[in-house]
Every structure is written in structure tokens, then in C-alpha cells.
Image 1 (cartoon, each protein chain N blue to C red):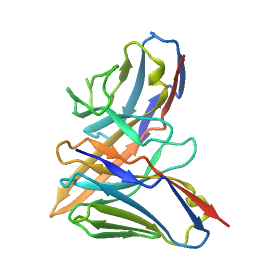
Image 2 (cartoon, rainbow over the protein chains, first blue to last red):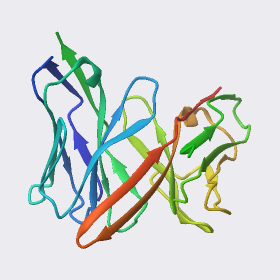
Image 3 (cartoon, each protein chain N blue to C red):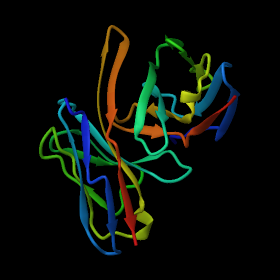
Image 4 (cartoon, helix red, strand yellow):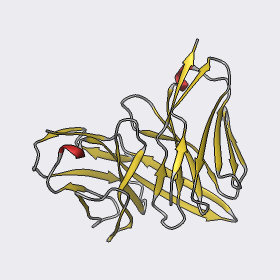
Length: 112
Length: 118
């Protein structure tokens, strides 16, 4: 089956690094994604990683993919108050180019 | 480019009414999808399309119809609205390709339609 799981909440002090974790079940995933959703807004694609990569870095964001354990993580360096949002992990399943399975989201809150 | 546009932004329906949620994109993307988002849950796929004339069901298709007569438009129809269909609906379009073993992805979500069924 296809399932994506992530923890519901994460609280981080401003300036520290945030690490949001995700596990998925479909070993044939092609792309894995991280989205950001701010209150009342749609989803914004933050970054993605292709399944033949282990790591992708984009400014303050680092994505790590462990295919053996089916584990994906998003690290946000120097977390700021503007990073407060819900972060969704998602996978594109191989069986359908247009089918993306989402996790239920991790709410990131920033402490001063 | 306008990206992905959705109309209406808000809608209130009575049980049993029908309506169409509009979605359009001007990026010539082949792939388009409809999702619903309920409180405390991620997005669930309702229907998707890999090109004009081709549609398929997602995780939660019951009570919804779609059609894709053009590349640009992908309307979602609620046949007979039920309170369980109260949700926020997102349309998305995407394009992906693999070249030399490296994948590139372009994906956009619309701003959403908030639907309340009484």
C-alpha cells in the first residue's frame, strides 16, 4: 500500500535548526517532496528530491533521503519566525505519474 | 503566466445541490489533479488527469466527476453535495521529466476553494 507518515508537531527555538522527519511505504517512489502551508493559504512546493539522490541542499534547506529505510527528512537551518507553518511530506508513486500521496503534515512552531 | 487559478474561492451549498469547481492553468502542463484537505489531515487525491481526454480516480473519488476536454481546464463536479464534502479543494498542475538520470519537477497548486455544505 501507499502511505506517508510524519509527526504532528515540532517546536524549535528561533535560530536553531529544525528537522522534520517522514517515512513512506512505496519503494517505487520516483519523487519525494516537501511542501509548506501557511494559515489560510495553498501549498507551496519547497523542495523535492529525485529517488536516485541521497541529499539535496537549497540555501537553508537540506533534504536527506534514506531509500533503504524509506525515510525522508527536511532540515531548516537558522529557523526563523517566518518558517512557522505546516510542512507536508509527499511521494509520487511510480504507478501513476500524476498520483502524489501526502502525509498529514507537521506543524512547526518557533519559540523566541 | 497566471499559474493555476481556481474559482470560486468560497462556496456554500445545501445538501443535494450540484456545482462545478473550476480549475485552469496556462503553463501547458499535461498533469492536473484535484485534492481535498480536511482538518488535521494531509491532502487526499480525488481525481487526476495525465492529459486531455484522460482522467482517472484517486483515493476518494466517490461523489465527484471530472473531465479534461482541453489541456488548460480541469473542472471538478459535485453531483449531489453532502455535508461530508465540506472541505478545502486544491487543484494542481505539474510537469516532470528525467534527463541523464536526473529528475526535474515543476509543480503548482491553486489557491484553493473553501466549500461548506449545509
